[in-house]
Image (tube, rainbow, N blue to C red; front, side, top):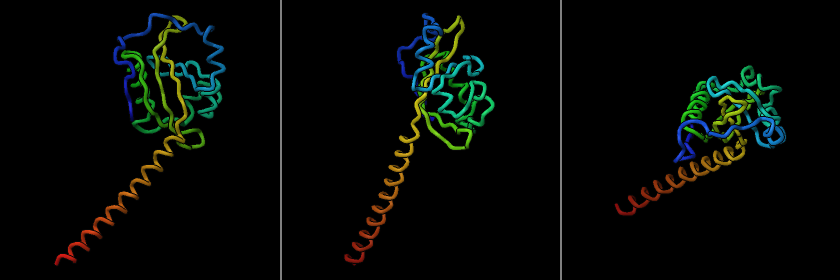
Length: 168
């Protein structure tokens, strides 16, 4: 799991400004990006926009706990809760995460967790972008490089063998 704190000068704690849901609602509802609001202590999904529900192929925020989205460590709900807690204590967290949709297919996403205060309560705002195609391309590239490395090793071995015979 790749995690990194994206703000090196971030002070611990939450921002002093409050995010007002009514002002944020138009952006939240109409964003093409997945936006999820978590309780900062329990990790419970308080709200999720249409893009998030579509991305995870679920009908309501409650389905985040009932759907089989979570995997074994390091992509379990407990692992996610640790990152949510870290964001609430240290500030913005950014990482790649793997989920499973209700049909059992795996997908990757880039996640950014941002601590916010909304309606007088501390929450974590999670934005996610599906990076499944990028991950598939990376895997194809690694596989091709692995095959190329193996072929070069075989050529090098054959060359060494030929050189050894020639100098005998």
